[in-house]
Amino acid sequence: MSVNKSKVSKIHPSYVQQYDVYQERQNRRKKLLKRRLIFFAILVAIIIGSLTVYHFKQREIHAEKLEEYNQLKEELTHLQNLEVQYKEEIELLNNDSYILDIARTNYFLSKKGELIFKIPDEDPSY
Image 1 (tube, one colour):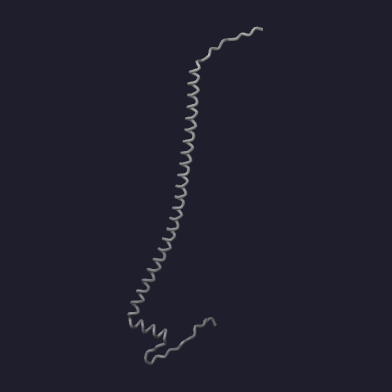
Image 2: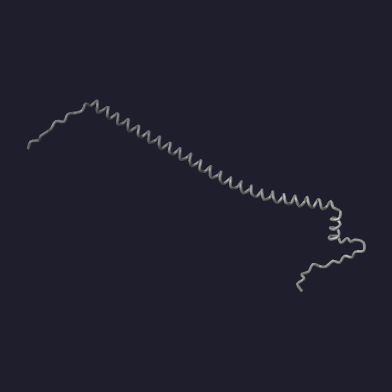
């Protein structure tokens, strides 16, 4: 058996070394690129997460303030109604005939020759 050995020519070792250095440099660049992308992705995720949390907190605060505003608005309308009633009562209390009517009903004062009968408050069902 004869072995046919073909001759393979060798590439210059300097070219092979340059190619290996080039490949290493490319691998390092890829690693650095991956690290930078991961770092920025984490940074963006943290920023988006914190903004989301802040947004929901602000929505909650807004809802509370809106509820408080509505309660205070209702209280304001109630107090305005009371103010109107009190002004009407003040005007009536400045009227002498109204004061006399109150004195007659609450304190049983009467006019001359008038008799007052107090009827007990009972249920007139029978």
